[in-house]
Length: 213
Length: 213
Image (cartoon, rainbow over all chains, first blue to last red; front, top):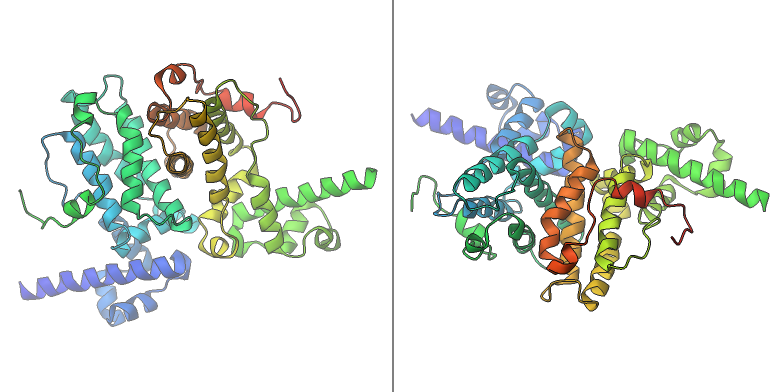
């Protein structure tokens, strides 16, 4: 039990170190040597967990698509908001999230590994399908198309903010994005109840895992 | 006069070749040698126009931000639509547009050159300020924030489509994006009159320069 816990910890150290090095050097510029050094581990320990840089990058990608902290809400569309706001809170704080975005726009890495985008579109589409079933969305809504719009626009906001700082943080910009999109998604009675206030992301992301409150 | 025209043509050949090579090899992987070869020119001819790869890249960036083909419309917000749809038509057809997006998400190029994003935000913001002055927008609209949202979301749509093909082309996706955003931008009476149908981009982009129809 103790050794399994240590194993999980080592694995996480490697993922975090890999994310940091991918962010700094890009995929091609990153090496297993630099990653293990950054993680404070020996190469032997690293290769015990990951057979190659590619395997590490794939695990970083898998790690990124998570709705941890997003709790079931009375309104299904609030969960959509919570996913978007929670991720906006996490992106600047978790190297894994930032690295996944960097890898997605890196031609070499993308050709080799694909991106987390299709999986994110699926996550959002599933929420929208259920929201539509419950009558929370406008009747003509196409969940796949809207899932793609929300995910793509989210990605664009974070990439541009990185380059064109505006004084506001990513959460404020994602809140603004949602305020622009939700009137085309939610019926008015639901729209009026959705909480998109900045700070929502922190409240979502900081919920202890396993909580059901 | 003839030699000036030839000079302009040579310059354009170099810009197109540079865009193609930046797209294929990234900024760091591109060389003046490869670019001049691709343009079918001698290095001497190339350096007569551009002193370095960096100078070429800067001109590619300058070239990209254009509202050519977007004609004055009765509704100012139709011009916003036309800019977004026209660019969606051009991106897959003009290496310069695709190269600029590639350079914007390339860390090395971005640190060195900046991106076209701030200028695009300004272009859209100016249209929105005028649309608001004319009473076409919802009264609470913040032109800067909305300009940023439209530009960022546009960018995200094109990046994701590149990776997650959907069967539909960029114009269809940008039309869908606009259909999601415009209800939060336009007053209802204006909204009902805006043409976002795919095909609008081609009609905009193919207007001969200098036309006033």
